[in-house]
Length: 180
Image: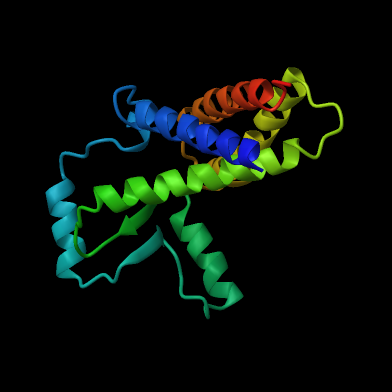
């Protein structure tokens, strides 16, 4: 069990360090967080209209809209602008707790992978790397990539993260769990 915990701890650290590089000095996610020169006016308009915190898709009808109203919206919206918004009423710096939560999530993800790997009969480096990459790909395809299908966003930075970080974790675990 100690071997597995060390494997998960270092695996989580690999994920955490890669994510720091990817979002920080590497700036691979810059295309997903672009600057908008009109940002102050847009934020002020949202605040002036007392928009509650939440996620919004525009244009959208209320959930109780009729099928006829939904069809009409589809016709009216065709070819016009649309947006997906995550809105918060107040910016709060929580860097320390975000880092702690991020590392905890990374540790748990690596722990789950270790749990899967140690149950394999003839675990070798190739199997560990491919299983790790498959694990990352499952998350990428069913969450991030699916979001790009519906909301026309880019997922290339997340695909890069998926391949690099899960490939590194797989290589680490392939070595660590087979040291005997």
